[in-house]
Image (cartoon, rainbow, N blue to C red; front, side, top):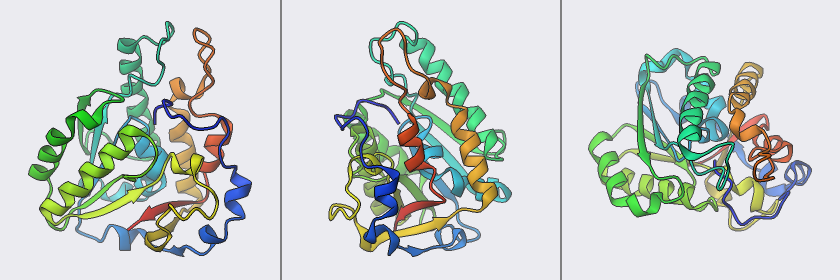
Length: 253
């Protein structure tokens, strides 16, 4: 998640989402239904926190199936603090990679057991590398795989580029595509017709999954603190975290 979005300061509040008729009507889905036994889950994250923000609870639920999991970090998230002297891009890139490793461990996952690829594409410009990303995914994926990405209409350029690439790669290979919103919680309205409610399902999280997700988010220190060198607020402010730490994760099937 990178704060280059042209959205309002606060966005839609958690209270508004809790009063959403459309959201309350979304049907539940189980982890086994989303990722059947024997299937490989490939999680495609635009930035090194999106896998936690979008599906950290789901990943925590797969702690006993780590050999069935592959993570792909498309960028290193070096663009989240433009103009910062506290976080120049080389330092920020290294910091975010370290944060991501700590976050994955907080989910109960062992990075040494997971197939984890960092592609190093430029933060904020994934769309320019779409052909390469589709080719890489199409070579790796197989029918029977589950490919999970950010939603292709999420409202952030990298999230949308990754979502479109995932959709094309899934079509090329026969993999099953799952999409999850991140920034849409900010800009969408509670009963927004732009949200594909007919495809939406709720993955309810256990208390342990919620706790692990919360702990994983706290590992992303660079995203949780204000930047005194630019005066920028935290990327993950309290309002954003409230929306992303609901007791369920929303999946578009």
